[in-house]
Length: 297
Image 1 (cartoon, helix red, strand yellow):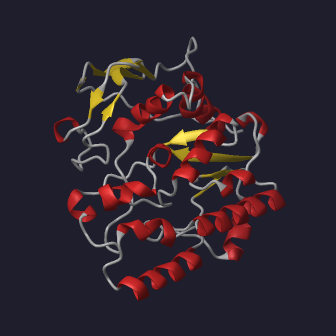
Image 2: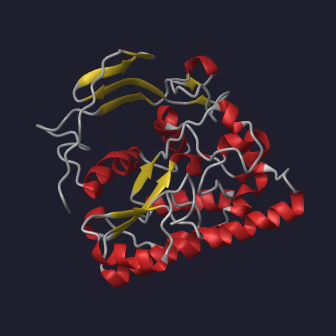
């Protein structure tokens, strides 16, 4: 519901009305108001010409644009009794739109991404396009509100929105640099930083990254440590320490916004479908994936 990548946009009111009225499955949507964003882009061009600084990104992809679209999606869902999941929320104000409580009791659920919990607008000066993403990284106040909403169970899922654009693409000027970050490798480590600062408990991290994901999307036999379930497990050493440098990056794009950072935790091992895929700092080389099964909610 907000232009982000290519032509992945549905913002025609009639089309949206039909989708929310008739969709037999969960509707998951990126919420930003495109007309408001286009107006903000033009204002930035008028002020800066082609040299728009990356620090303008949270003003162009503004909190107001996010709220307007999220509120519209929720209004459509309630009016049509539709099942709605709002992706990668970024603002304090949007939190008022969502109810607290367990996933099983909700028809409207919410997600936040790890980078919106880690960075804030002060990081644009240092990282520039490396943290350009849609919706934009916003203020420290917004970030704190997202963490609070997780603990209040207004936010149901923590995700990544992994988008590994090439470094050469990210080096372009504001309007040409693509939006998105490579996040999968360090996502869990960022959450353990919040564990160390006592903002998120271990139980909350497990719930929002595993249990609630399986419950929300109806993923069969995954998301819990239970007899008979697939063993998709991560073994974490909370005090192990992980230095992020160019040599350790596994994403094919070859860079990370976390380069130069030392995480306090370390990933000791990862099991996929019961088989070890990562151990002691190295991939095992096994291709272990298989299609997921889903049940309706």
